[in-house]
Each structure stands twice: as structure tokens, then as C-alpha cells.
Image 1 (cartoon, rainbow, N blue to C red):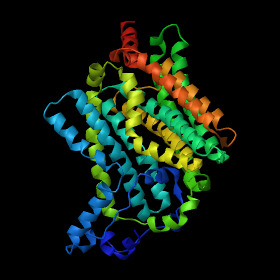
Image 2: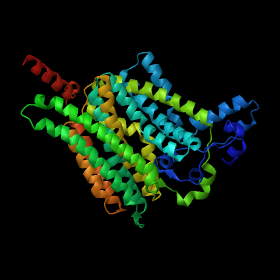
Image 3: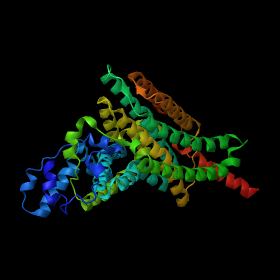
Image 4: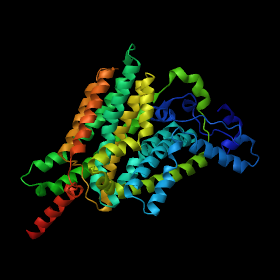
Length: 449
């Protein structure tokens, strides 16, 4: 990897323009460090012998972007999903292949975002990470909104939060506790406190529209008010997330920076950009296009997969989609927990949950408002109750700044119970969009009056 600095063709302009001192010395976010755990070191010895500079640069990009991850074995699922869709294969096969194809794409977007950040500096890189960190969930949500599948949007976003708080964090604490039985596991609880407060604010914004619905004799009487409250709450949540970014990237940046102290010497050679800025940007756009395509396939085929497998749409959206879509990020968090680096694991799990709850969810409400789709923050009683218990359980788990395997086990058991609840749930998909039907009936009642 050290030869990358000596080869100007690898960086297109021969310099590491914009590479800040902090980035050179390994001061990176937990999200980036978690993603890097699944990357493979590339040997450019053979590629460097190619005489044609253009071909050499192209081969290096292929080696670093496509083959530079341990998940590269899943890339064939992308063309397989496209072929299955074009030639009319089973819809459930299209669903499975699309999910598998999204897994390496999500990890590569994180890698490419980090590569672009080497040239733009840590602040712009942090903003890129804040917007691209959950691009898969956001794109799936937008496609679902475009086809008026509000239930899929709510279920998938709720599932992402639950999987981060209970599955990822629980597995990390459990595995870290088992692997370090004789060591006292500690972490900086200040970051956990900030994320817990943000999640509690998100919970309040979800609770109020639901309570609004139960505060009147008829849901139709409060449907329009609940929708307006949701839109106002979404704007407040976006403003709170903006303040959170200022807090994270400027005023209290030291709380969110992760350092891998035991591997500083190794990281010194690895903390270099391996592709150029414009190459990284072009790859990032290309990966986003494929994520959008596969996300469209997932949204279009999820009902067919549900019918074929006999599983509810809520179970597929809340349990299966988040696990497969964020497998790379989740695996990285667990790997660092094994190394007794809980600050990184917590940064991944809590940071991702906060980003979805305080940015992606309200953004979907605002986007649906622009699209003329009536999506609110009322996730219904069962879903909101599960979210509340997950946030409260996580907050209690992280309150003392120490960890052991029992805490992780409890969070995992909570996730299993919630998963079992949605597994046995058999609510018809068409009945899930309660808000739309309620709003229509309320409008009709007002018109007749």
C-alpha cells in the first residue's frame, strides 16, 4: 500500500490534495473504521507493469473498488438480478438476488465516500458520510413512496433502527463480552448519551401522532391534524439533526472520532487514497445508480416474495431488509467488539440508528409531502411500542459506561422476541396504509357535511 504514494497515475494528479493532517493520522469516524474491517489489501505489483497509463489506471480502479472487499463474491448477484428481472424469472428470486447485490454495494459506497473525503477534508467527508451512510434505506424508501407503498417505507426504516439498536449492538456487546471475559470493557458514554437523547426526541415525534389518533372518538377526526403534526415534527427533527451535525463535526468533534491505537503503525501506510477524486466520484455515482435499480426491484417484488414464502411484508421489511442491506457495516461493528474496541461498535450502531431516526425518516415525510403522498409519523401501536422499548432498553444498557456479555444477550433476546412478533403477525399488506385510508374517509366525511 505504501507504493500508492509513489505512483502518480494512481491518484490522477500525483498529489494527495486536500488530505488533512487528521486523516493522515487515522482520526476517523467509527462508521469508516467499521467498514474498513471488511476490506482487502490490494497487491498492485502486476498491475503496475502495464505500460498504458489509461489501462493501468482502469485496472487499479477495478482492483480497488470491485475486488478490494471481502464481499466481492456477492457482486455477481447484481447482473443475476437484472437478468432475472428482464427474463421474467420467479419474483422471489429477483427479490433475493437484489438483496444480495445491495450488500456489497452498500459497503462500497462507504469506501468511496471515504476516498472522496481524503481530497475534500474531514468536515466535508463527515457531511458526505452523514448523507450517504444510509443511502440504501433512503433510496428504497423513495421508490416505495413513488409507488405509494407507505407501509414498506415505515417498516424498513423501523427495522433499520431496531436492528442497529438491538441486533448489532446486542451482538457486539455479547461477542465482545465473551471474547474478553477477563477484561473490563469500557467505553465513552458521552457519545452514547447524545445519541440516546436524539433517539428519545425521535420517539416523542413518533408517539404524538399516534396518541393524537387515540385522543378522539374517531380516527378520521384527527387524521388531517396528525398528518400536519407529523410534517411539523419532521421539520423539527431535521433541524435537530442539523444541530447534531454541527455538534459532531465542529464543536464536539473529539467525542465522535475513533482511533485504533493498537494498529497505528499499520494504519499509517493504509491511510492513503487509493483512487483519484474524480474516479471515486464517478464510481460513487455508478454504485448509487445500481443501488437505485436493485432497490426498485426489491420494492416491486417484496409482496410477491411475501406471498411465495408465506411471510408477512412487515417481517420481510423489518427483519430481513435491514439485516441483509447493512450486513457489511454490522459485521464491522462486531469485529471491533471482538477486539475490545466498543467505542467504534457503539459509534456504528448508535450513529446509524440516529441517522435513520432523525434524518432519513423525517426526510421521507417531507419528500412524500412534496410528492403528494400522505405519509405521517404514526407507525401504529405495535411498531411504535417496539421502537420505544428498544430505545429505552438500549439507554438503560449504556448508562454506566461498562459492558459485559449479559447486556448484549438481553438486547439480542429483545430483538428475537420482536422478530417473532412480526413473524406471526398476519396483517394484510393493503391494510397497513391506515393513514391514507383514514385521510380519504375524513375528506369524504367533510365533503358530505
